[in-house]
Amino acid sequence: VTKAHDHVYNRVIAVKDADCYIFASAKTGDKKNPLTPQQKLPFLKKQFKAATVEIVAGGYIEAFKRLSPADKLVIVVGGDRIDVVEKLANKYNHKEYEFKQIEVLDAGSRQHDTLSATKMRQWALDDDKESFFKGCSDKLSAQDKQKLFDLTRSQLLKLTNK
Image (tube, rainbow, N blue to C red; front, side, top):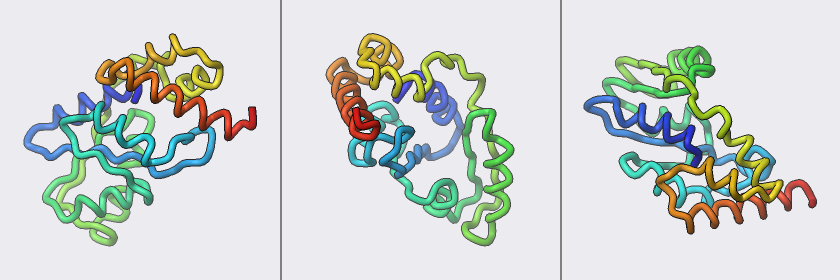
């Protein structure tokens, strides 16, 4: 739910003549994924209003299965993931799912590197509410940002035994 995620989302909804889906990981219980799917889903739905937002337990493969069969699958990812996702998507096409065409698009340059999810989690852990709020999507209300901060901080403190 960072401003950097907004950047990727804008690229997703710019794809013409397509249904838009955002698949979020079901991973939880570690410092990188402190929130449960049930905790993060309401925030994601507020941030990504023009898309169908779902939690997926099986990563990319499971997400692709949910969209199959279709004529075309367009996947938008960060530039650092293009090669890996493209190989994975094509490797299991016609085995695990069915698409006539698969295209992987670069979400574009990360303009908000200083607002990464990693830094957001650290700001929550450090009780730096001001920085955390600045890194949150502008699509979230002040009340949403406070709730997200409190949840993230609480979960991280449990995980780090502080």
